[in-house]
Image 1: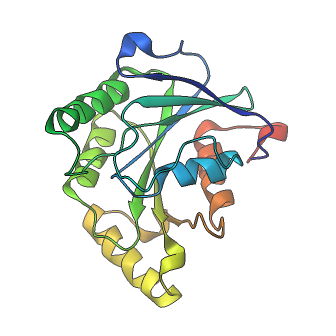
Image 2: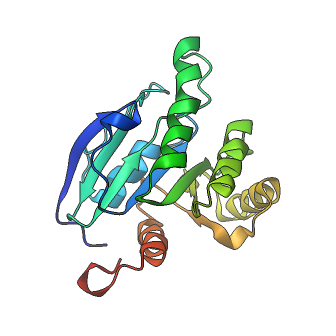
Amino acid sequence: MQVVHAEFIKSAAKPKDYPPSGLPEVAFVGRSNVGKSSLINVLAGRKGLVRTSSTPGRTQLINFFDINGILTLVDLPGYGYAKAPPELRKQWGPMIESYLSIRESLKAVVLILDIRRVPSDGDLQMLRWLEMYNIPPILVLTKCDKLSKNEQARQRSIIASAIKRDKGMLLPFSALSKEGRDGIWNEIGAVLEIQGNQQP
């Protein structure tokens, strides 16, 4: 997608604080330090749209971003960061599940997996939630630049087996080279059936 306008809308923790429903939404979720903020920034073509941090667990609220006035990208809190305060860790699950279960404008969720890691219990739980609420997953493997092509192929097979999905569904991505950006937008466009000049 040719992004000409990208801006932060608001942050929220509870449904009453979400922005009004209207535009289709695509949410992004993954374990802490998986490269979620970098992925959103590359897709939006805005380096600082989402704050990136070397400290895992920085995203603690649900953040909404307007893209071209036709789509909202939603940054969900990262999960699985053991050093976060226990009370904060307890909030993340219900916060994410509440959004997934009631947000009518949500059309797809980009589930982000580190290609170097075996999917975690949190990743598998997220897939179960998406199945439960009938939300199409878009599966993205980040940090592909850190592995050789042979290693990437091996890891894709391992991850596909762990999550019981065809490895062709796993979209490779590198924030460093921006490889995979167009493929992810194509998947988002297919789900949303974006037409005309806005076609990714």
